[in-house]
Image (cartoon, rainbow, N blue to C red):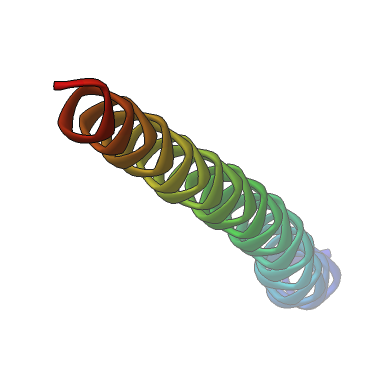
Length: 71
């Protein structure tokens, strides 16, 4: 009976370690997916910001040219 319990104890430990590894890998995949989404959003926000700065610079230069030619 003791040998049977020891055997179950060993197998239970191994199965527990396998289950923990599976959960850890799932969490790691979720973390990487979250980081990828965060990086993509940051790239999009940076692109929109640069685009807006270019548009503002163009409008400012256009206004300055109109003021210079109007004087």
